[in-house]
Image (cartoon, rainbow, N blue to C red; front, side, top):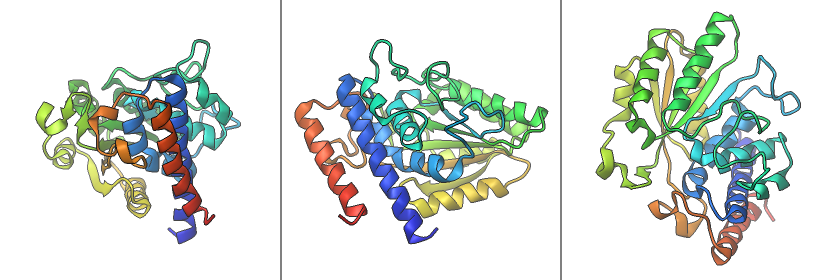
Length: 281
């Protein structure tokens, strides 16, 4: 990846983070921490990896993305808005009555959302089903899904992974956001998931373990996924919850709490400064 490409993706990620703060502040609710941590991945997916067309969101041949950890909808919505699926100003309607941007993704309301999610564990099952359907229909589209490391405590996740390996779904990429925090505290204290990479391999996945804030590592992993044949691909992605906002950094407190007016000003000032630095202003 060229320096210019990396800079462009970093700019996109900074804008996505600003959208996350804008939307959760306006809603006075939402989940900013995990959304901020996954912003680099979302920038990479929506501006480099996915074959999608904002002018034709229901294209039957499009790639699919399923946000299995549906509570991080503010990140997904910001990426979709930046990609052109709907106006950026809509982000300020998050969670409001009548808005198409509800607290969890709704495929019937929001352009660009491929699956309604929020009940943890179900998204990866839906993604595996989509990938299996593509095989049956002899379609070339690929399916991507993002899970939290707390989410994988759900048994349904492992049933879906077993199915994916059994049917050799090499068109499926399962990404696990390993930030080490969930709503009740550190994952090691709530339910230690152990060596996730080794578990994915034991379930029949080819894998990569990466820094989810490094675009070169993201590119390498997704290239490996495309080259893998005969088995699904898993990416264990190490991230820091709350990335981009100093007082949210690596803090479980910001799993599901919106910034107040003063906190909003601090966050937007920090993110705005980062954006200006990236754009050379």
